[in-house]
Amino acid sequence: MDELKKEETKEKITKDAETKAKREEIVEKRTIEQLLRDLRINRNWSYYNLIEELNKQGLKNLTVKQVRKWEFGLEYPNLDTINKLAKVYDESATRFLMARTNSFEAGKGLIRSTAIKWISYFFGVSIKTAIVLLYIFLFVLLIFSFIFFMRSMNGLIVINHL
Image 1: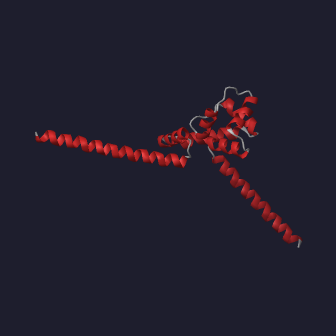
Image 2: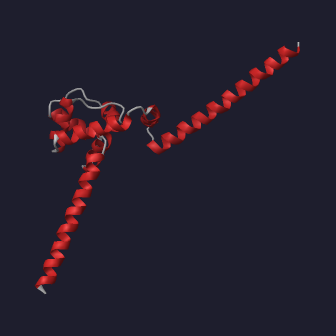
Image 3: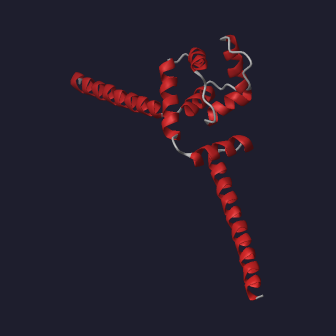
């Protein structure tokens, strides 16, 4: 019986270690915007709660607009702000810096990604909704371009007949 309990305990410890390793791997791949949003939401804080905590750390003149831009990945907090965020959330500053680096890596050369983030931020909608809005905009733009092209071709045909 003791052997069975020891075996079950070993299996549980192994399973717990694997779960923790997977969780840490996921955490390491998060971007700064994901990390900031997750930490704030996990504490059930509004933007105002976070700003209040950062004010206590000496970060004055912070607005909801700035915090939202961080969470949408439109701007990134500077090193001083990252240190204060680490204190507020009781996390290591290294974790924030790694997440910021992940954001830079994920965003290299992605103009479309930046456009989607701005649409999402400006209209206050989710990223998925912003993608749909962007495709609708591009489709409407394509239709107007086609109409413009056809009208200009029609004008050329009339001129050529004269």
